Length: 99
Image (tube, rainbow, N blue to C red; front, top):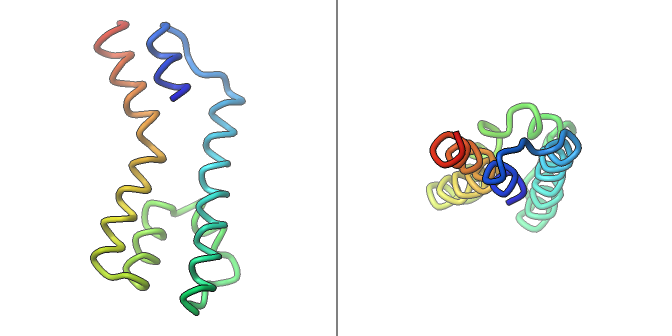
C-alpha cells in the first residue's frame, strides 16, 4: 500500500520500506511454508528459505503443487500476486495518473 500512496504523491518509496517489504514478505512466506509442511508431513529441503527467496516464483508453485495439486497452484499465484501487487499498482499509478 505504501508504494501506491508514494506513487500517487509523485515520490518513490524509501529504500528501507522496499527492503522491509521484500525481506518481510519472503520471511513470512517461509515461516508459513515451514508450518504447513510440518502439518502435512511434507519434507522440505534444508535450504528451503534460500530457495524460496532466490526462486520464489518457481519454488512456491512447486511446493503448492506437491501438497495441493491444481488448487495449490492457484493459491500460489494469488500469494505471489499479493506480494508483487503493490509494486505493479504503484507503477500503474505512476505511469497513468502522475506522469
